[in-house]
View 1 (tube, rainbow, N blue to C red):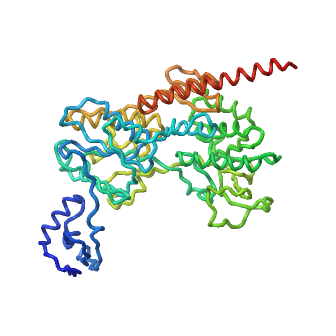
View 2 (cartoon, rainbow, N blue to C red):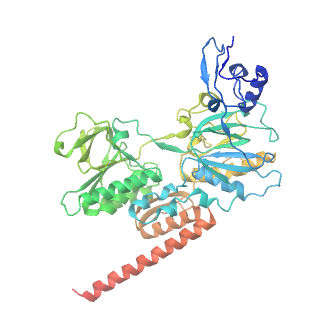
Length: 536
């Protein structure tokens, strides 16, 4: 039996009518769970309880808690597409939808939601450390990219998903709301179609001490923190004989690119140690890329510790460099710049014949593992309604629609799509870029009641940066060919220039890169001429 105690006089409304209204606002909430919640047009607080599942408790509910702010779409008659995540999958899906031809009454309103104000072209984050690119070139603001489009942008964090298309009544394009999305700010978004492209973040919880001591490298903020730390270490060691010691955990593409970039930056002022559990670097890379990377790392005297895994990371003081610290001060922050800060990494062999080691480092970079952000949403419904795999990715069919949810598409790190052989597609920028093209088309097809296309990944090749004027590129359409050195570097930059989001941004970045290249060429010619004129 429900007991209601009101703190001011109000006209009582029939409970069932209130429950019906709330049920329309939250279509996934059972009516039995809300039938004793009353609202007033004036601000007041109410106390209510209801026997739900045998739990008869009294809870105080405020008007702010029961009335979320609802996002207002510009047009209530046109389809509403909400895209969560502004990475390669999310942003490029929005731009694809904008480029398609629509009937006036079918062209959807597109809302892009991301917790950052900037799109980040992640494959070129390494060039921030080498100074080869500026931040605006590879991390433009969404507001600038979308200024000449009809795509709306909202900077916020996703908190809760409540899809309703799984109920079987919202599968057709002509039906009403497909569900709701609750943001961290308290804003509630109703959508007709949803795209999940939330991406992933570094997984630092697998090794004790990694979360406190190691720097991840997957976002613009990560890159800025690493660059800031390197600047601080370079200032600290200026004019001294001591070396800057950098430990890179993981020798996949990201780890190798970081090791090559930082070793070129520090030169003889630093020692780079790269740790990998496998006995090879970049085990999934084409042989040409792997061999080119090995040659560069060897020439820059990067120490490869292959066949090891990191057991733990601890912080120690400069005065205690002869032994590992027994305890880690909980107040230490990973972005600390104190000159006395040192890290110790305990390495255990993963192969027979190797001995345990303890490394000392001024900077620890973590490139191993990631966890999809989709699995971290604060939602009881999400885990029950969305089919997620063990990694927290949504299981999708070949058209990129989430299984059991005809109005939800998932791509990139949020998707667990398998290829024809049953293997999960890698969560790379290339895969997400191609999926965005298909997701945009399939949304057009679904809204216009046309057949959806099955996604087929086409591997175009793999690229990696190895320094300011060095890279390796292995195109898939010419077997055995690897472009490396300055030619590979130029080819890689050209390929990524073409992949930048909009024509306007490509033009600005292209002019900027050409200008920088001309200035560097003139400076190199002047330096060469000065050496010739100065004589022996």
